Amino acid sequence: MEQNPGTGRGELTQSATPREIFADARDVHQRALRTLAAGDIRDAAEKAWCATKRATDALILERTGRLPETSSETSLEFRQLIVANPAARRLRGRYYAHQRLLHGDCFYSGLCDPVEDTVSLIRETVQYIDDAEQVAYP
Image 1 (cartoon, rainbow, N blue to C red):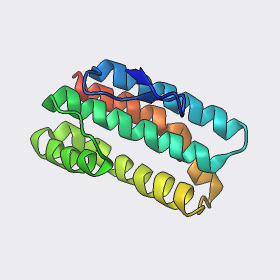
Image 2: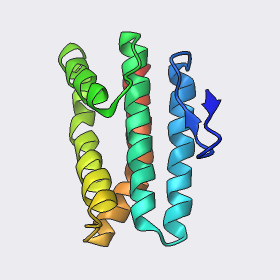
Image 3: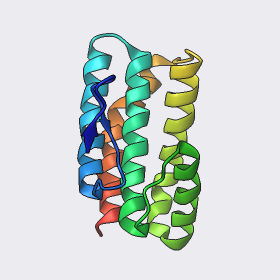
Image 4: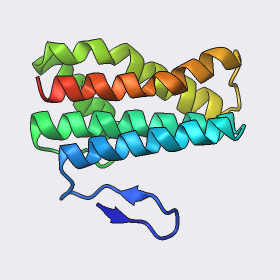
């Protein structure tokens, strides 16, 4: 994985392995928790969504051999994976809740209320990562 000097974040490349991407998802989630502790719920929500997407990308790469390049590709590949691998179905609701509530509503629109629910989603992201990894490596 290469570092993006502008953001200090790792950029996923086609050569990244699923395990590297899962590890990166965990790192991004830890940054979300630190950001949340510092009082920036919007940025924490975006980081938690990023961790969710990266874990989903890792799952897709492990199961299909393809790494999605865009969020739209991730969603499409994820839906296709659910059809091919019903074990992934248990992730669907959480993936789309994170996409809508953390990424769309909280980060983009600033609609983070009720705050307790948003904080819970941010914290629970690690469970999503764990579950995605279990689907990837049954």
